[in-house]
Amino acid sequence: MKQFLRVLFMITMGVFLSTNMVFATSWAYPFVVWDDHTYEVVDESITNIVEEIGEVTRYSDMETYSGNFSNAYPKGTKYYSIHGVSTEEAIAVEISEGEYKKAVRKGEFQADKRDVYPLIQTVIISVVAIIAIAVIIAIVITLKRKHN
Image (cartoon, rainbow, N blue to C red):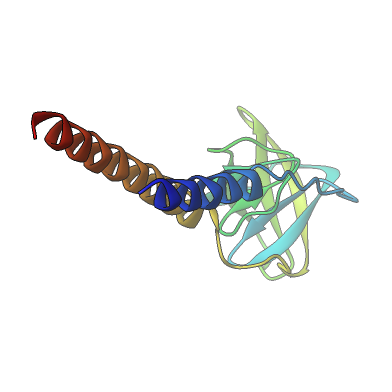
């Protein structure tokens, strides 16, 4: 039983230590991702917006995510189509209420399409559950030995 708990502890420590690594990313320009394409937000005001086409679903200036991700604008920032301009060329990003900046399409978003955080969360919850079960088993065995 002690050997089992030692192995379980070592595995748990390995999982926790490996999930605490931080990877910083350096960005060349502010951007948003829409429809799996990167749009560089340029310093050009836009007034002729047409309709809302999406919004930022995740923000980080340190890590890369999938979906409608941005390295400069918070979650909830709206994207709009521009009158007379194809969304394959550019979109508008609402930087504040009623103020829009042009975002020029740079190409397909090159980030890893998998979001690892749900996997990490599942692993951590599983490890905690295994530890809890092991502790309960150890307590039950100890109590049985004391009563015998």
